[in-house]
Each structure stands twice: as C-alpha cells, then as structure tokens.
Amino acid sequence: MKFSISTHGLYPAKIDNVLEFIDGVNFKNLEIVKEYPYYDITSEDLSSYDFNYSIHSPISDVNIASHMNLIRKASIREVEDSFRMANDIGADNVVVHPGSISSMAYKFTDKILEYNTSSLIKCQSMAEEYGVSMCLENMPLVDGLLYSNLDALFDFVEETLHSQICLDVGHAYTNGFDVDEMFVCDRISHVHLSDNDGSYDMHDALGKGEIDFKRVFDALKAKKYDGFCVIEVKSVGNVYKSIDYLKSIKMI
Image 1 (spheres, rainbow, N blue to C red):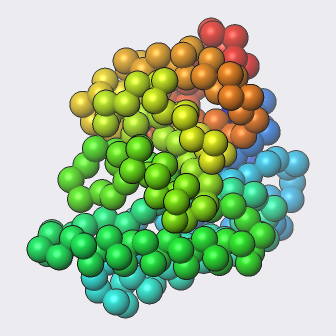
Image 2 (image 1 turned 90 degrees about the vertical axis):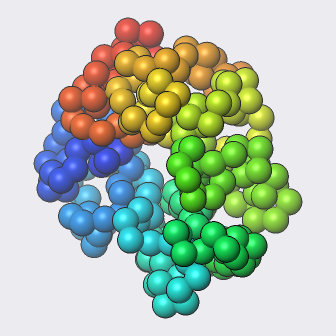
Image 3 (image 1 turned 45 degrees about the vertical axis):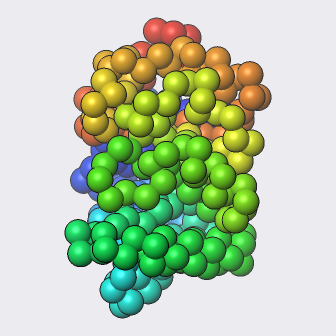
C-alpha cells in the first residue's frame, strides 16, 4: 500500500505550498480535491516534483442525482472535468461521490435513484474514454446521502456499474461496519483514512478515535492491496498527528 495525503487537510494552502509540504514530510503521493484553489491545476503546476496523484472530484454544490435537470447535468460535467484533469496530470484514480436526496425529493426517491444510476453509468463511460479509473466512494451515515451502506455499494458496483471503489474507512465505521466487513469486495482500489468515534464523520487524526487501524492495515495486507491509502483529515495538525501515528505502528 502507498500512503498519500489529501489537500482536504491542507486547505486552503496554495498548490506550491502543498507540494512543499508533501515533500517536507517525505511523502510521494497527493490527492487533489478539485475545488478552489485547486480547480484548474495543470501538469505544469506540478512539474517541480515527481509525485504520484489522485483526484477527488468536487464535493461542494454538486449532485449527480438531482431532480433539477440543469444541476444534475452540470454536476456530471464537473465529474467529467475531473477525469480530464486526471488524464492531464497522470493520475490513475478519480474519486467520485454518489448523488444525494434533497429535502424536496423524498416523495419520489425511486426517481432519484434512477437519476443516480444513469449519471454514474455515464460517468463510468467517460472515465474509460479518458483512460482513468472512477472510484465510487461509500458515504457516511448522513440523512439523504446515497450508498452509505457498504453492502449496497458493493452490489451496485459489481452488478451494474463495474467501476472501482474508494473505501472510506471512517464513513464505513459511522455505518456500523466492522473492519472484517469493509474489504470483502475485489473492486476496492483506493482507500480513505480518517478516525471517528462512530457517531459521525469527524475526519479526526488516525489514532484519535475508535477505529482499529492495525486491523485495517492487516486486512489490506491480507488482500495484497497495493493502492493508495489517503490521509483525509480536517486540518494540517491532524495530518501531522496521523503521520506520527503511522510511524508509531511502523507503517511508514
């Protein structure tokens, strides 16, 4: 497995400062959340360092399952532009969130699920055209978010979507999934790491919550997992604490 750091914990530092930080902590992998100020990153912006990258498609103001046609179509375009950026900078994986059910849409949930499925199928087709892997992420236990249930996500990807999966350990833990239940699908090719106490998605530093990361890493080793494990925490302080934790258990 290859440890990486998300810009989520370094936001809103400029990309030059982000790259300096990654180099300073002796990492070689970075996940770029494609939102301001990292919205228009090019390969030239990254040329000073020989890092490996992944992209997280935009989180804010997008909903690929929206019942508002223009919003749904614009959201799909944002995902497509993430594939374009990944192709440009040489990133193999693009993390994509499923859609959500807005407050006005609960009376026709079936329609929202149809929109979500059709949008994701379209996105998967575009990912293949750009030569990158779409990694559909499991969501935390939050009202309205689709695919917070890991089993449902695994079934959907295996039977319908045929994409890759980003397994968010913290999200899975808020849904009551044990480590032994998290890594049963062979389509997991990307992992997000953060800690919490099971009550909500805290994005705390590794080792600060209740998740048994030694078991997580043992499970990944047993699967011979060789993809990214991305530290996706809420502050630069939590990035440092997570790195210290990984050193303390001799993972880096």
